[in-house]
Length: 234
Image (tube, rainbow, N blue to C red; front, side, top):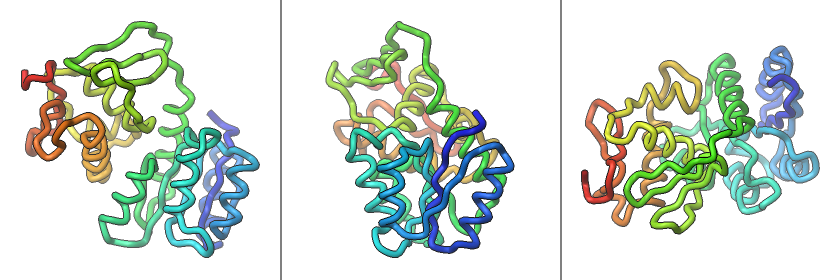
């Protein structure tokens, strides 16, 4: 995994340097950008393997950078980890809705950030060798192409959303805890389970007819989530 190019975008140069130093010690090749316009230019020119993106930036802000990345076929698959000092949950939700894969609140642990970087890169670089489809009610997952379909219509899922759906589908009918999802999707053992909740919320908006009354992904209060085997509540 070592050697991947990571762009660190933060207008606080001390933080950017700290993150770059930590990544460099792990064998990565980090580069920093201190404003949004420079960051987008570097993303489009160099196509980094992952972007660590602060939300509050001079010039283009983090939301706009993420939106443009995910709108472009050339950069939409690049994983994005958002950094934010803001406490409003709506800011995080807005970033994840645009396609960001993960987020951390400032101040953050450098060890946790590196762990999340490794988990995202590991997932982005892993290719499924399976050629079979996985079916669960109206859902079909192409495990080789890492694509999902609802009633044979393709779903526009982010890589993280697809992985969550795959884990739930492989365990259809069984409750998967938030901690298990954190471990299997992000490689974290313990952490902020709100990351899971926001991604599940976003996933439901794409696969449920009425996300407020989900029929596919069931919430087991205090336990986790379960994908029902059929689309009829079974």
